[in-house]
Amino acid sequence: MTQTSKNIAIIGSGLVGSLLAIYLKKRGHAVTVFDRRPDIRTIEFSGRSINLAMSNRGWRALREVGLEDSIKEIAIPLEKRAMHVNEKPVYFQKYGKDGEAIWSISRGILNRKMIDLAEESGAKFKFNEKVWDIDLPEAKLFTGETEKSEWKEYQYDLIFGCDGAFSRVRHKMQRRSRFDYSQSFINVGYKELTIPPNADGSHKLEKNSFHIWPRGKFMLIAMPNIDGSFTCTLFLPFEGPVSFESITNTKEAQEFFKTYFPNVRKEIENLAKDFFKNPTSAMVTMKCYPWTYWNKVALVGDSAHAIVPFYGQGMNAGFEDIFVLNGLIGQYGDDWETIFSEYQKQRKPNADAIAELSYRNFVEMSSKTADQKFLLQKKIEKWFSNKHPDKWIPVYSRVTFSDKPYAEALAIGDMQEKIMKEVMQLPDIAEKWDSEEVEKKILALLDN
Ligand code: FAD
Image 1 (cartoon, protein in one colour):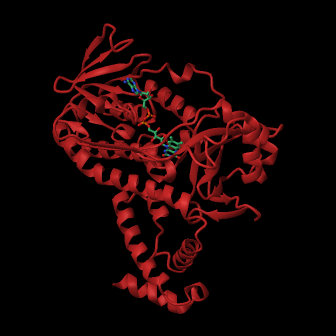
Image 2 (image 1 turned 120 degrees about the horizontal axis):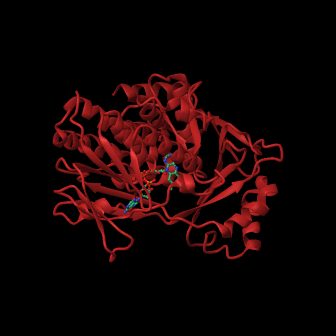
C-alpha cells in the first residue's frame, strides 16, 4: 500500500535510527535524524570499539532494503565457539548446521556505514543537537545546549524515539497515566579490552570463532575485527572477592589475567593497560509499555526494550522492530494509528521474551557452567538434537538462526526444559545418558 509523504523526525542516529531512516526514505517520506552526539564519522576511533554479533533477524532487516551484501563486507562470520576452559586444550563447538554463523561487526564501523547509506538515500542529519522535550500530541520536539538554555522548536507529522536505553522520548511518555516502566541492573559490569593484530596484520586467535573463557561468576569473550585485532569483553561482578572493585592497580590486573586466563598470557601487558584506561559499564534490562502515542510518536530499538547482551540480540531485535513496522506500513498505508497499535502489540511479547532469554543466559553463564548436572543435561540435549534435528531445535538456534518469534522460542524452550527435568530424574542417568531408553523417553514426552 502506498503512503502519503510525511515529515518525520527520528531521535537518535544509532544503528536503529539510521536503519529506520533508510526504510522511511524508501517509503517516500522526508526524514530528519537528530543526535546529541557529534557525527560518528568525524570521530577518530581505531575501529576496535565494541563489536556485535549480527544474526538472522538483523540480516533479514538489512536484506529487505538491499544492504546485506555491503554490510557483510565489513563483518566476519563466526561458525563456532572456541571454549578456553582452564587446564584443557581449546575446543570448538559449532553454532548450528553447516553454513550457519553469527557475524562479528564493529558497532562504530557499522554505524558510520549506516549513516552514509541513510544520507545517500536522502535523510538529513542534525548532529550535536540534543532533544530535551517532546510535545506528544503535537509531535513537536525541542532541542538546545542545556536543559536551561534557549530551545529550538521543530514541528513534525511523526516522531520516532530511537534514542537508546535512557531515551528522552520515553521519559516524556513515562509521565503519562498507565505507562508501565521498569528497569533493573545486574550486579556484573563489563569492560572492553583489545588484543592487537600480529605484526603481519593477521589475527592472534582463531579468526572465525567466538572465543569464550567461562570462569563461573565471570568470563572473558573475544570477537575478531577486520583489522586483525580482537575486541575482548570482560564481564565481572562490580563487588566481591574477584571483582572490578578488588582489582585496584596494574599489578593486580596482571595477576588476575595470569591466574584466570593463562592462555592470553602474551597479551597481558595490553589487557592490563586497557583495564585502567577503559571504562567499566553497567548492563540494564528496561521494559515499558505502551511504545507509541496515538499516530504521532513511537519508540523503536533500545528505547522500547533494553536487554542484557548475553544472547547477542539487542541490535537484532531493534532491526526486527523496523522489519515488522515496515510490514505493517505495507499493510495499512496511511493508517498510522493502526500501524503503531499493531506494531506494539506484535513486538511487546517478543521483546519481553528476548529480555527473559538474555537474562537466563546471564544466570546460566554465571552460575551453571561448572554444575555437572547442568552440563550433563546440555550434553543429552545436544545428543538428542543431533539424532532428531526435526524434533529438537535448540532454543539458541531458534533465536539466532530463525525468523520465528522470540516468544515462540521461549515457550518451546520452557517445554524442552520440562522434558529434561523428567529425563534428569531417571536413575543412573549419568551412565545411560545416550541410551535407547533415554531416547525413547524423550520421544514419548515430546509426543505428550
Ligand atoms: P543506541 O545505540 O543507544 O543509540 C541511541 C542514539 O540516540 C545515540 O546515538 C545517542 O547519542 C542518541 N540520543 C540519545 N538521547 C538523545 C537525545 N536526547 N537527543 C538526541 N539524540 C539522543 N546487540 C546485538 O544484536 N548483538 C550483540 O552481540 C550485542 N552485543 C552487545 C554487547 C554489549 C556489551 C552491549 C552493551 C550491547 C550489545 N548489543 C548487542 C546491543 C546493541 O548494542 C544495542 O541493542 C543497539 O546498539 C541499540 O541501538 P539503538 O540505535 O536502539 O540505541
